[in-house]
Length: 542
Ligand code: GLN
Picture: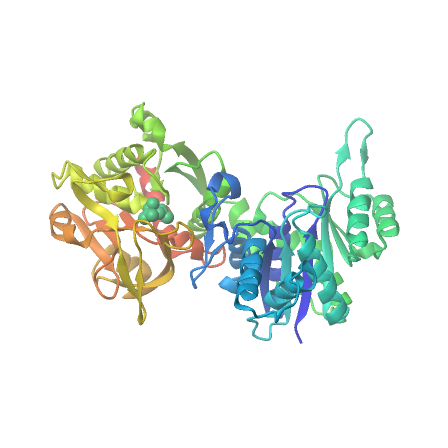
């Protein structure tokens, strides 16, 4: 029997709904249940692929090539369950499907309306592509009261009614602010938010109240009374020092017990939370510290590199060190000397990126890392910049560049118009739409025996996730390898360069894919573990 838990948020955004959902997923797993987490996003974009990272943070990519909300990254990092296309939907996708059906005549002359046609499409999505999981946790993006969320809230209201309380539950996150002048916690915004939900026909069964201080019993009683929930179902959600402490914190406040109680599941056995206490212990008591410079473009908004900063933390956990990140806007290197910014760091990472702006600064960071023997990790754009740097500064191809920036005399990075995915051939043109037209999702990569990456992965073939339009040009392989940059990972048909590395450098690896998307705190990605180990070695030198 699959049980559905619908998670909504009220009062303000950024309450940590995604983390709360992910943490509840981890707690249910720790009680032996299988889970799947899904997100319904109320915006009109068909997917977040075309949104600026400044607007929406990172685009999280799944194995099956979906460009999704960054909360899916939290879900995967906390539960280890690989997300799929069918785990994230937006208003834009629902509407485009409904309208396509209408154009085909599938509605047989009916007047197509939000209720029932749009709500039916949402309900279908929520219940589709499941494998008999014990729990489906379904988060609704946005805040209750937004016009955009209404069809989603109506759909989950209907579902709650159809499934009945034995198979469904509503969880609502709110804010309980502390008003310093009055010296009091205020429950009114929570009351109003629940009223708003009730007005839409949804009675929450459990409330998570985000707050900065412990909740006195009197406030808990008051919220329970006014919001019509049991007192033990008012769960305080206090800030914690590490996101990986969230599952234990919610467990201590009784969240998983309340959920089990609702579904009449046994609560006598305690969940095993050992993995989480080990992770938190490693985060809280590191034996050292390394500093990594992340040289990118969207550095003012850390959410733009969410999976990356988490993967670096995981690399730190694996090496028992704290990883301090120096976020550097690469454009600065086009005005100022790199040395003063990079002299003290133990590793340099150039992450994924798009567009010409700031690229010359990134190339300078690569050159610094290569010449000074500082560990370098280039991810996607960061690999492409490493290739351009090698071509220009070692192979003597002064006009080397990427066609992403316009015409290049030596296009060492260029647009691939055709490549194979399994049995299929994928094709792209210069004029294609921007949405959903990149090389997306998991692709296999063969590792050359005897290379550093083969040693790190301890394997001869791996599968990693991609999100890019341009590729390193295999036509320059010989010149670049003569310059010392070895093509150590290739697509199985040997056409697409997937990994490059220098042998005579302490640690210099560029990858065309995004390994950060698959790293988990309980299973750090081997490339991040190895990169941080190299940074630890470097920290002993400087
Ligand atoms: N802009 C580059 C491309 O499209 C790199 C993309 C990325 O770093 N994700 O190929």
